[in-house]
Amino acid sequence: MRKRTIWSAVLAATLVLPAALAAPAVASPSTAFGVSAISAVSAVSASSPIADQLIAGLPAARAAAEATRARLGLDDSPLRSAVLDVIDPTQYDCPTANPPVLDAISAGIQDWTADQRLAAVYAILFDIPMTEAAYLSTPGPYTFGAKGAYSKKATQTFKDLKRFWDIKSYDIQLVPAHGRMLLNQARVTKVFTTIYGQPADLSANTAAFIAAQVDTPALKFGDHPIFTFNAYANSSEGVPTPGIGLVPDRIVMGDGVLDGFALVGLGDVTTQAIIGHEFGHHIQYEDGLFQSTLPAPEATRRTELMADAFSAYFLTHRRGDNMHWRRVQQFVQMFAQIGDCGFSAPSHHGTPNQRTRAALWGFGVAESARRQGVVLPSRVFAARFETVLPALVAPDAD
Ligand SMILES: [Zn+2]
Image 1 (cartoon, rainbow, N blue to C red):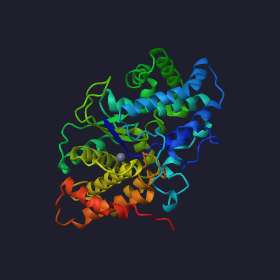
Image 2 (cartoon, rainbow, N blue to C red):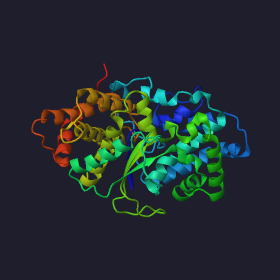
Image 3 (cartoon, helix red, strand yellow):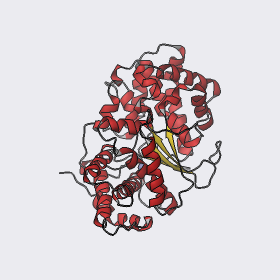
Image 4 (tube, rainbow, N blue to C red):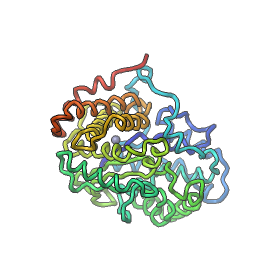
């Protein structure tokens, strides 16, 4: 099982930590979920025996989560220690401010209680709703966005992508992840025990604690975008996942990313752009495009920027989503906002500037052939991308 995400998902954890103690937004991902997260949570006072136990158990829980995710091959884990420092941050122009979408989804978090933050850290650390949707079967009917606002768009886009690209895709599923599953103690317990191998008693108690804290207006009864601000593409490549069995190839679409980008005026394009990106990862699985001799951060950056380009090409192409310049600018902005500056982390997805350039390049390829209307074979498109990659990632600092 391999899994790819839409962004490095590092900031989600720091957003729920007490502001004074949280790592800066541009900190290396190696610390975002690391010691600073644990000490920050430990520094808040607990209100109950289970809260005490969860605070005391956080380092062990983190280690367990990390070990399981590594075993499952979740190569985009934000928990991984950065061991390589191959990309020099001083060479790249990178913003120090949060992108607008992160400010929008994190508004109000500073008013959460210590217990609400603790529950949220566990939910995000184990990535409960997204992980469940990726590995287990979830009840339908499938809707997209916490209020279902993007269901039609998501379903239609997915159908269009299958028709547009030349890979074998009939067996790929599109599934939603809803944060409100955190209210369902049985389902949360099952994620802890089945996927992470956590003890049954502790899992049930943790699930009860999470449900109680999440079932509040501040956390939007689970629909808060922070819990599902991501999207996954996973492929088992025919190999059963230990303890789980054979998992179908999937795209998991978190409500939070759709609702979050709607808050900053990009709701019109985000569904299509994100699903297009995740579909791009399935192209990479099917065409064998993940092989690379690059070290971890550069290898991830390469496949992420390529997925942005696959998406932009589909979004612009006359036989794809046929978007014109106004909406092209919007999806380019969206990709920029999920760029990151975690240069040395294995999960580095590319800086905002690089993601902008990759999306604009994909747009340009489609636009320059608009009249002919021919859709390039995915391998041909990927080969063209490889030739421009060095230019897309060239140092751009002043
Ligand atoms: Zn991705």
